[in-house]
Image (cartoon, rainbow, N blue to C red):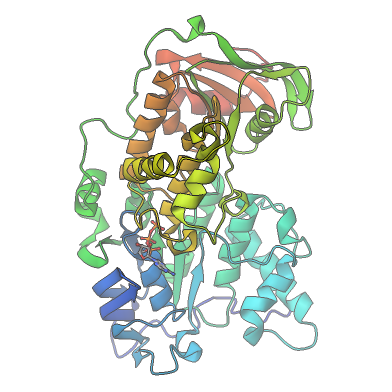
Length: 514
Ligand SMILES: Nc1ncnc2c1ncn2[C@@H]1O[C@H](COP(=O)(O)OP(=O)(O)OP(=O)(O)O)[C@@H](O)[C@H]1O
């Protein structure tokens, strides 16, 4: 007989409590929650209620306090003032900090996964859910639970419980992270922090289908995302966090994307995020900075492409179709079929592998790449370095300022530093691998402007994005499928619809540039 230690239906509690339908019963209530780190007031008196059977969307700019609030609601961190009630019990921390037992049914899936890379999937499940596993045969029980939940949540996931986490793709790690959070004997609240930033559209759809089965069963789901349209399509209610306080809570049905952006404090600019920013000059006239000629290699089949000086080139298509391999080759052009003139900077898609120096300050992280361009005859120039740092911190509105340690920044602000570091260098070619994951809409719009400004000054950019709409900011887009370029789009040909159509087109027109 198949034995499974995790709740088959994750929520074992009754659907009604005290005669109230589950949809109205609060699972977690925060009242007047404040949290301060040094001089930073991350939360300034938050009131929030998450109810059984609902999806509550939580939105807010980078550094608004979302992750801090989640850590407090999940009992991972004590608040300075205020109360947190979980399933009717006051779980506010006493002297000794939050009591783990009170928060047992509150589980969180992190944006930067909490998995241990050296361990297998089953071993990671044991680490976070050992209280639900037997002492004997735990590995098998954890593996069975993981396999079953992976199959339910992400059909076609392509992993087995014995796989080591470090061998998984970013998307697979994210899937395992979400599964890990859901595997428990009783689930009251599932917190999903930017769950789809690394997932493809199919996996995202499967996840949200599963979320609906959870809520139908009385589980509350708290969804944090910068993808406002996604939040509005999945959530029942939306709460907006701004500068550490919940400033609005509304039913999702009455809200539009612009309403939410306005509540977040973003200026709803006339130029929207997805609107095309036209480039100056014809792309074909530019001198060539980098090119690949008929490159065939692991993951690539007969790829030819060109990058002009001052050109923004997009790599589009479904995830994992060869775009990362192209970035890798342009970064390290080891063979004759790939030529790059000039210096390069690379922003990898996986922040945990970005080479960021976590114990150093924002300023030190920025200077480390800019130093070579600033120094004269091998001598550093501190005043110029400080000016460069100040400029980038201001341009990208990096909250925390130049002296903050990287580990003290919110996820989105860390990502901004990584992008700024590449542009602060003197590199002729900047390679970007899905660089804006976790960056809020407002800042993204600024970054699109920054890319265009840098290109106008002669810098070339090659940019892979999982969001097809972002490709509208490129001069030229190569669409990839199965390691091949299946279309080359320029100027007005570049549109989300066109990219999607070519990405999914049946005929395999290898190198069949449209
Ligand atoms: N451990 C910490 N030490 C010092 N400051 C911190 C710490 N954690 C968070 N902060 C600060 O608290 C504020 C809120 O950060 P938080 O991570 O909660 O924001 P967020 O809304 O989740 O942002 P993002 O969308 O970028 O993930 C930020 O100014 C951040 O720099």
